[in-house]
Amino acid sequence: MKKILIATSNKGKVEEFKALLAGCDLELVTPTDIGLSLEVEEDGTTYKENAGKKAVAYSLASGLISIADDSGLEVDVLDGAPGLYSARFSPKKGATDADRRQYLLDKCAGKPKPWKALFHATVAIGYPDGRLVFTEGKCYGEIQTAEKGDGGFGYDPIFAIPELSRTMAELSMSEKNEISHRALAVKKAIPYLIG
Image (tube, rainbow, N blue to C red; front, side, top):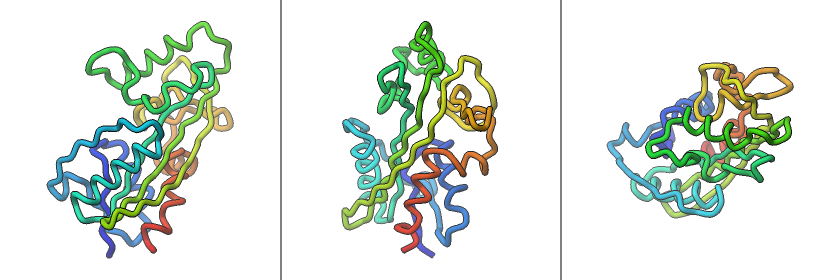
């Protein structure tokens, strides 16, 4: 069975990757599983650059095929912000997900609704020989002011999907894994992982 390293320490992302790849004949491991402690600075100017940096660094450090992603929330009334800086979108030191959601809502306040938004994910598969493969996924929705749901992480409680009349945080893992940006990108990556 082919061993694949999930190149992140983000517990929410690890859970999603494991759920998305559960049906594949792959042995999924995390950096913790193999005793790897690695910090990769996400200083690229695109999702692709950041995902690629992580995938290559983890693959070279472990000798395993690695899957990484970089993702972000892009809000139309904020000219695409927070985008690449979604995980760092708050001036508050040590900001939590809740702090970032509140900061985003404060920035949107007073702007015309609906606050259309999309989640973007770029997945990178890094090989020990330095090769990289990329896939992408997008999920469209709207930002709402009231937080709903206790699933997911990040901006999920305020990212509503109008067709479902629910937020991303109100979806079950299996529902989320049908439509989310990361799910779509990972599904496209599966042939490269099992091939």
